[in-house]
Length: 336
Ligand SMILES: [Zn+2]
Ligand SMILES: [Zn+2]
Image 1 (cartoon, rainbow, N blue to C red):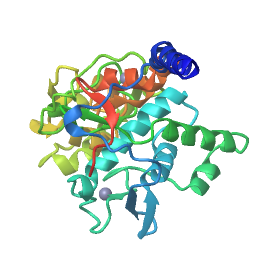
Image 2 (spheres, protein in one colour):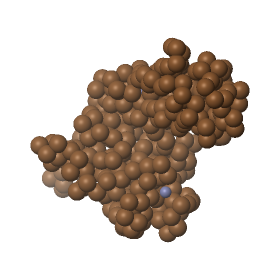
Image 3 (tube, protein in one colour):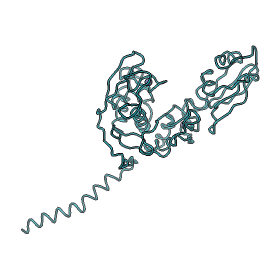
């Protein structure tokens, strides 16, 4: 009886002292651990490989079946330089997973509306870029290939099943290469103002070659380039006569401008001149127009080069995500 009492006493002591110590250890890491999901959207922690995707490969026209996590390795390979710091790749993995899952009909999405039967396509201008391992290996420097592939797998595995939500719902996890100093509000690029896609300042992408670029165009080439967007381009007009005032968003990107007296959208202007962004200033010198562009891409959501800059300065992937998406949580994938 005495012995039994002693054993019970020992167990109680172990539980009283040991358990809190274990809990403290589990919570005391230096890395910021994603907050627990809301109790009202009870998570189903999706182990690797549980969700399967049907992918339309736009180059071959073939459908491919892959698990979500395996697919994401190919998205990272195609969408972000593998040389970027691991925390930036992890942030991109969570962003790409969120973007993908939101598209899936199983989660209430529309799938790829261009290719019926596919959850998503590999056309970066429509859904999300993706590369097979063989394609990625052929593109990477030979001596880096094995290490890069391992790094991408680590980024996906370390964030397995994690997505970004705002008020319990998956966000439109859009991203771009380089914001050039300030990201953009969603309504200044598309029609909808998303509370989590707010303009934030970002100087972390200053290492990108797209941070500030100049593009010289002759007045004649400019006139030819805008022909599809302007009803009447005067023959032999100078740059000064062609380019009028611009209406800009708060971040400085052109929403619309006057070209030969007609209103052209910032997006069409960028397309016509093949400029990297709509954040453009210009200077006219004789028969030349010198455009200075800041950033590359639409500027909404995650700035990829900014993520790399933040990661290099010691930010963790949840901190990177927090910077570019307002009022969001990194959480486990909800049930389909
Ligand atoms: Zn698509
Ligand atoms: Zn940036």
